[in-house]
Image 1 (cartoon, rainbow, N blue to C red):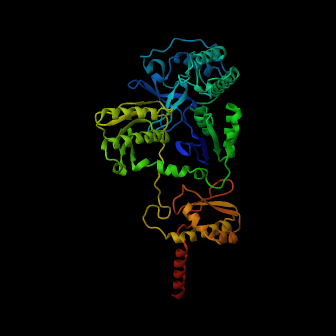
Image 2 (tube, rainbow, N blue to C red):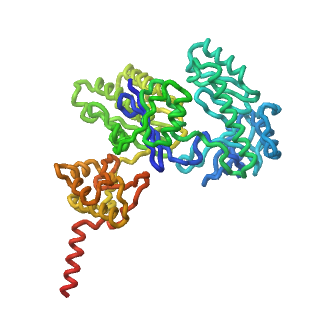
Image 3 (cartoon, rainbow, N blue to C red):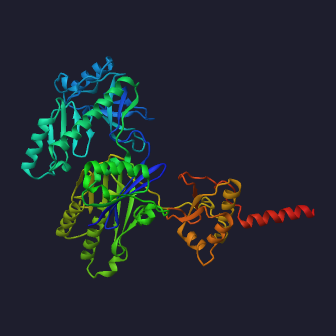
Length: 541
């Protein structure tokens, strides 16, 4: 299987697409420079105690107060609290956690009022990003994630990934960590640490320990609420979690992000750094790798898959609902039962892909096509477990109920990815009336004239729909050729599949958009002719 990673960097977002044999299986879109991302650390204040919920609301600077439950305080909260109070009271030096005295664990059945008070300062970590109307969810069990290890202050436990099957390797890794681990730090050994040498693990451990020291130093000097530690760049953090030795290529369309990813891959897999490649084509990177088209067909209410069957996906605040329909697939089989089983098995594969693709979490209810035979129902259940075996998010699958419904719970850390595949007409803005598409070329020509002669912008790129691009560039002496002879050869017209039919966007050489859409979009040649007729009429009067 050929695995490739494509990273699309825009001024506002970083989109990462994982392709397996050219098929889109994972899509992540991250807003650039966003706070309150999972893993970020804040120095914050307790704003409100809620004994009924056994939780507290904490001010981290978000519009809605963040939620901190008693069980998210961690068993070593007493040690953590004593150490933090001492560190914040004496800002002359950063205290060494290794010298901190260990206190007894907090009572698992205790209440929030036993350990917290209003106005208390805490170092908290975002466990869940803000979702819908809810603020971030926090934890005081702080962790720093690396490629091979996860470092946990105020914890002395060593855990080794269960995905490492060899008992000898588990023992070896545990012995290594015990020999290099600082006091009062816990360590989780990740699956990627399998087979790694002591030097590699020790270097990463020291790097993570330094992250904690720097965060603590900032907490001593900054007023609450303030960000004291930010996860690695969004692109690097994504690659850190999904990087696999099986990757054949990683394509990036931004030089700065390319350098970050190249340096990171060089660090974790020195002999594989050549797989990171800078994409420098005028065609949008997602269009080049046929990702835009796959996004258009994979998102939305209706999703078609093989043999004419399709899914209907609806999302609510409480849960996601998926309905499986056979479509015209039922015409191809004489047996209703065998047809239902075949469609359901194919649907299970597509649903597993959709859950990863959309990052759907919480409760998912699936209405499969009814099957009478119990062995078929069991076969579908077993197939679903296999289909979701590669999903990194924690999940639980229940067998089909007596109503033919399958229930799945899937870890929800971030909001589900919701991409609108329908397009609002850029000409009428939803009013229902548009100018003739044939006149759109006159609009483009007017914009070129305005850019070159009025704004004095000689070099730029104008992105249009591929159909419009094909029409403009058809023929030996095309409209595009004539425009370049008239307005100079400094501009380019480039197709972009993500644009609507009569939509266009203009960017300068620095990649910054030039907004000219408000500049009389309706001033087509027809509009100009009409204005000229009015002028002549006024002259006659």
